Amino acid sequence: MYASVAKEIAQGGDWLHLRLDGQLWFDKPPLGIWVTAFFYQLFGIHEFSARLFSALCGTGTVITTYFLGRQLLNRWTGFIGALVLLSSSHFILFTRFGMLDAPLTFFMTLALYFFWLGQDRNRYLIFSGVMIGLAVLTKSFAALLVFPVIWIYAWLADRLNVLGRSSYWIGVMIAAAIALPWNLYELITHHDLFVSSAVTKHVFSRVFHALEGHDGNWYYYVRVLVNKYHPWILPAVVTAPYFLWRAFRSREREIIFLASWMFFIFAAFTLIQTKLSWYLLPTYPALSLSVAYALSRLFREKYTLFVRLMFLVVMALHVPYSHIFDYDYSPLIKGIAPAVRAGVLRGNAVSLYNYHESPAVSFYAGRPSVYLDSPEALNQKISEGGLRCLIVDRDLEALGGRLFLAKRNLEVKASFETMRFIVSKR
Image 1 (cartoon, rainbow, N blue to C red):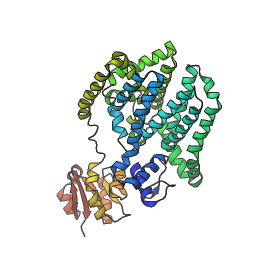
Image 2: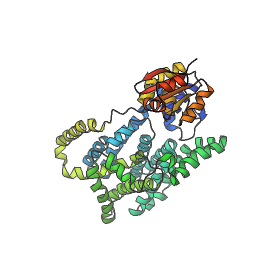
Image 3: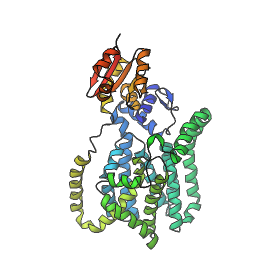
Image 4: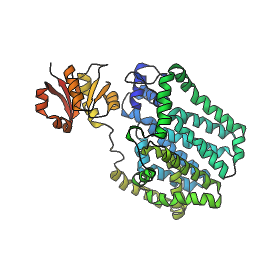
């Protein structure tokens, strides 16, 4: 979806109004979309360009985790923490997608890193505000979770005086100056549509209701960690609670900072009713440093060569098992897209029968699409004439296969693996 919105910017030249299939689109703020559109213009419109911003931000998060660990604990722990994050399957998987969660995680991690530095050097509090503004312009209100993490830490660590400094409030004002102009412009220009899409749906509805069937119970994200934070889940289930216990027992500022980061964001997303596994990405830098804290004591710095070899072995075994680099978002649509482009005039819609991949059709085929989710809807579309429809084999067979095509005067125009492009005969 994000790749398609950026594609319309690159092709149409309208950088101010985000559109999907020609319609105004306010699901997310524009920063990540703008960067992707810029990469399209540099490198061309393809998957590499669509994924590049996310991948760069993932790389930046790993690097920032190292520097953060070095500041909070020591250089060796920061190094191991960066390796732990880099080798976590869930993190690698979603930083390779052209989504906005890796950029959000990068900007939030930088914001928290600069805040930590800002306790001793005020100018970094201003840089923290810049990162918060960029995070909000990337994924809206989710970025504001940085503020309660900072406040909880400041309260527990007896550092509330930092929140009263002029540099902190200058940072807050800069964050607002970065995040507000585009949002205010769209609010004034497209008030009702912007409020319903960007605010009502993605703030209130997402928080209080499970949108689009993405629900889960109170331990949903515990299951996500168990199933997806590989191969480090076993040490993580020990080190994360240990950090929480130690934060209240020892009152070490560094431990309080990481514990506040991990547990507040985890708790916030647990309370939000819409559950999606990749929401956990912003917790991973802190969680990885908690794992690194234990590993750095088990393997001292004199074992540097052994630790490096251990991580290489872990990755050699882990990558083929987890299929991190095998994922293809929509191979059937991508494979049949040339036939769709040839068979459907630009601006006309292709139908999708019982197959909800509209953004993939938009990106790969450059055509809008409509969903037909029942035999009745399909028959109605056939009766109108000029059917152009994508359908998979199992659904075509359920309708009657070749007999169905013959009765409805349809033909298979093109095929790719199990996907069929059926059209009305002339």
